[in-house]
Image (cartoon, rainbow, N blue to C red):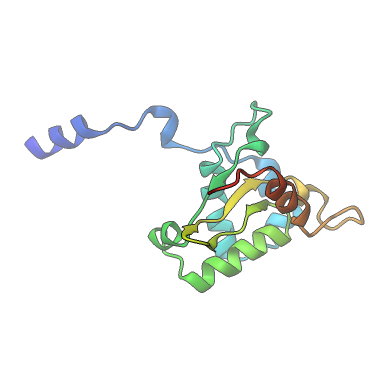
Length: 145
C-alpha cells in the first residue's frame, strides 16, 4: 500500500496531458489509410508533441523536435524512424522545419510542424515536398556565434 501511495503522490501529470486530440478527419483520410503501421503509430505521437488542439488556430504553426533517441524510446529503430519520417513528410502530415545533424560545433535535432497537405492527397493540387517550409525557416533562424 505504501508503494501505491508513493506513486499517486509523485504523479505530476495534469489531466490535460493524459491524452492527445487526434482528429477523425485524419483517420478517415485517404493518405492516412495508405500509411504503413509504423507511420500510423508515430503520427499520434507527433500530434501530441505539437500539442494539437482542434480549436487552436496556431496548432499548425507550433514547431517541435523529435529526435532519434526519443523514437528509440517508443521502439523505433533508426532506419524505421527515418523511413517513417520520410513517409509522413511525403504524404503531407508533417513538414521538416530544420534539418538535424551536426552544425559546426553542436548537434541539433530536426524540427517539425504539423501540415495539412495530406488533405489534398490523391488530387492534382497535392504538393509532396516541404522544401518551401524548410527554406522559410532557414531565412528566419537566428545566427549562432
